Amino acid sequence: MILYPAIDLRDGRAVRLVQGDFDNVTVFNDDPVAQARQFAEQGATHLHVVDLDGALEGVPVHAPVVASIAAAFAGTVHYGGGMRSRAAIETAIATGIDRVVVGTAVLQDADLLRWAIDRLGDRLVVALDARDGKVATHAWTVTSDYDALSVAADLVTTGVRHLLYTDISRDGMLEGPNLQALRRLAAAAPPLGILASGGISSLDDLRQLEHLGLGNLNGVVVGRALYEQRFTVAEALEALGGRPPAPAASRGES
Image (cartoon, rainbow, N blue to C red):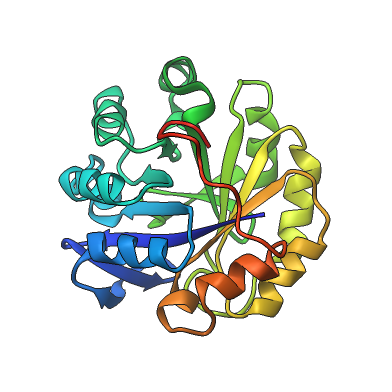
């Protein structure tokens, strides 16, 4: 299973939120590019970057910073936040990252989803953020009536290959991942490669994810636990399989 250290961007800094609350922000590094280099030095070969300001405004805000991160980090970089139009997605591609993470905009706009699949193929990741089993939208500020499992099952038929699942109730809380929800999600959409996010607090949490034995659970995003030094990148890599994943041969391959 692949480890994705998280870099969430707010006002140009690397931060973490609690349950997606923009009024509950902790700044961990004023220099996100330096943070990316630090993760690389510790052994990370993948990064998950989120433009929180972009998620709020509906367009990428920190594209120049993300471009600098992509240039400084030799491995695979995912970039999401504010990807609600073709122009926004093209802006993300231009930064040089490997995969674009799009949110509920593509779930509400079938034409945009088809275009994104054609444009990105394997480089597309659809983010499914859930609160009490329902899909959350607009930077997690609105909870919809859409059932997360049903949405995931529907995505199987579209050509989407990668799904980022975040349990909002666990995000930033350091209370452990929602294992039951991940089992249900994996069963509902077995062809999708799933990236889990939310709640990781310890190496035991990572081991529990690894020991689930879900063939389509491919990676985990870890933020606050790394920033608070509850464990190191090297320890996390060991917990997730005993060795770090092989780095991408070149940018664009992951």
